[in-house]
Image (cartoon, rainbow over all chains, first blue to last red; front, side, top):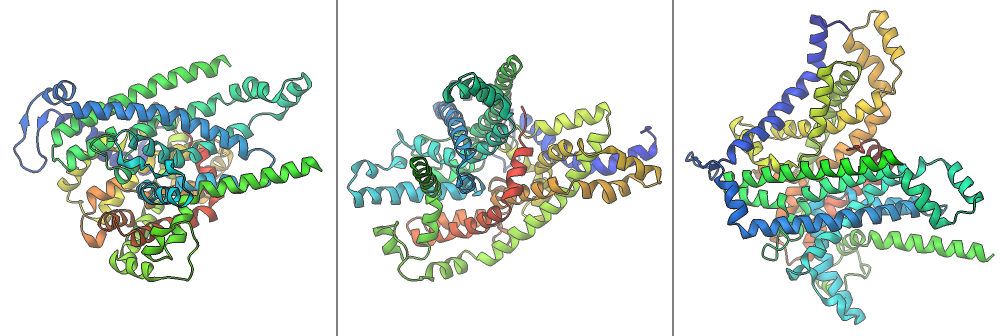
Length: 292
Length: 274
């Protein structure tokens, strides 16, 4: 295609609308956000006071609550990334077996993923606060009577359970695609060479699954830092602030406490962390893919 | 024979495991037909009779049909427009091999990594500055913009495998770019279009964050934000609260079960390689 008037007209028609909107509702907000983070501002009045990097300094020196939310987010991210991937891989192996019920299994495992995260949070509130303790009473198993959501020490486990329940199915689909793309010939020749089931998994399946693992790690890491809806509806950051994830913290600082400048600084830190973690992770897993 | 029995046991275990996994969902469906007292005493029993009071209460007090209508209008609009703009952009960015197109692609892709909460404060401010706050079309516009990169990414992946010879033949016959796209390319991309449309429908149905900051008036609320506030008010009334949840779960679960093939294909095609 020569770059004449017609070319630009077509290009503008096909790419222009979405590109303009994209600048307006993605790039511009991020730039504005950097600006807001340098102000002390409640978001409503016009009294915006320029404070430079004060918001950031305050975050890292004087804000115990922020520190707690950082620690919670990293702890949650660590466990949810590892457990979601293990569970998803196990589901994928189970579902790709020769069982007749595998379609049913796949449907069940993925179903929680299509449910709205806000709804899932509320639903699990019922399960954890009402159904499980009641089951404990009916069966006489006292451990079921503990309410995970009631204590700051255990509430994060509840958040983890719900995120596993919703996230495992999604990543399972990606692992299934990876498993099905592996050439059956490898397994046959390995079997002839006398490799056992476990050996075949570690020497053939796992290495050939590295691309899928990269994708799923990327998904789950980004998802862990982005967790918001379910966090809001399941615990609302509580009890106290025990389970206030970083994304929820941004939202609450800005829209409940009306501290737009301070909230924007938190948003920028979240952005930097997500970018940094993703780069480290993709760099790491990509390297392993090449080696294989 | 032993092998056969072993297999049968495995099948039964599988089915049971699947049921256990969706137990929380099943419990909502069971308990929406039970009065509060029965739910509290034993939430695991089947309803004894068809008790419909919860349903009629929620329909009335949550204004279910209004919020359902709002949500459906938004969902249909967003799906149609998103499919249109992302297929056009995705195809053009693939066929046009310029450096500019590559930069635009990377820029669009980068947004799939960035959490919405990192730029949600400025979005709220921008929406009120542009006077699109609390408007359905403003909400749709922003939603379409934020969903587009995923669609563009998926269309780009698909368009790479669409044979270019058909397009060239059309061009030789004198068809314009617009004509070529709508007459030839778009119909060829139908398989991925179905997947993208279903995924968009799921996302829009489930959106909470943007809707909660933009759609404040009662008459414009979507299902998810209506359910969230209904649930907060009725936090001790599990009968009403669970029924409200069912109103979100049933339609989307039904869509998923009917369109499962497309959902699975969409998730696989949309798997972003970091």
